[in-house]
Length: 155
Image (cartoon, rainbow, N blue to C red; front, side, top):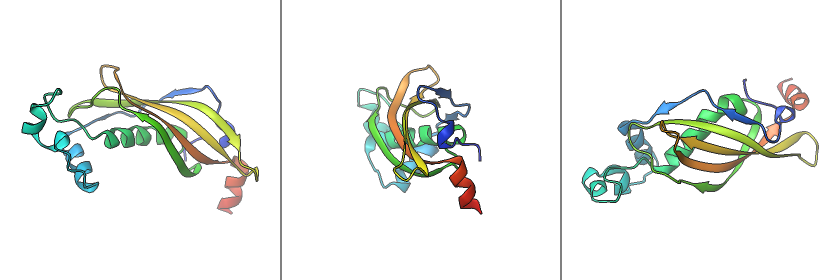
């Protein structure tokens, strides 16, 4: 486990995640197929070529999911009970096949649960392309384990 326990999160702390991923046409196609999203803007070269973008766009939910995945090792790998919400999702710029995505997380809020055994942590997650354009941002709230109670769980 490399994620942070509740006590290790500091409001205001920002983590630039090491992992990056270049999105291929195949990645986008598979994601659309798995989620049954047949939006032609993602899949149809001719259709997308006639739009303001001039080419197919990567599915925005894939971009968001990738940003979450990239953030997991440093933030929540093995240390959360659940993801509770994704709020205020925005896609300020398009993502295209061949773009390389990186992410940054900033802890914006934390509070203990009423039983004192876990805590709620909210992070603002931002995804950027290779040109440092912001392509997706959202708030992610997780139910995080406390170190002492995580040890009890393992016994």
